[in-house]
Amino acid sequence: FDRIRRKLLGLSKEKPHYKKFYYTSEPIWTHTTSGYTRIRCLVDRVNAMEKKSVFFTRSCYNRGHKVSRAFEGIFVTGRKKHMDVKNLGKGMGFQEDLLYATDDYRCAVVMVTTTVCGKHRTYDLRIRGAYIILKPPPKCLEHYLKFEKHGTVVYEKNCTDILKRQQKAGLYEPQNDRCGNRVH
Image (cartoon, rainbow, N blue to C red; front, top):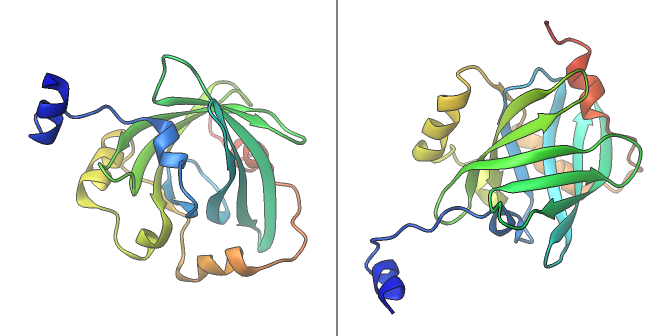
């Protein structure tokens, strides 16, 4: 009862849960990323949500061509902010950690950890649904800037067109796109 009362009074803030960020029928857009990339309009669409995982399609434009890839995000028991991401086709998996989310989960800061070309971390500012047409919420942007001062904006005004196109999608190799130009 005390926990409920504290929550109603706004005295206890529940820790963000990555599953709640993906529990949506809206597209999840990557607004800004810290990784060097030529891709544009990176978006996730949830296909199915299960108790311990989420199946989603990640699409983007790479050098002007639409590319898509199917993934399974596995929620790890005891690690509410963590998701192991398994590539359902060709390619390697990676990990994502929710570093910050607004109370309504419309905006989040995510750390992506890959092991291609050595262990590498990038930071993404992601926004759900139609909120993408607005500026990122100041608090969300503030948290992103704690991790990355210079990001690449990958969202553009015409990005919503990627959701309408039914053309055949090619393969998406995010590691190749990011590793080729990495400075060691």
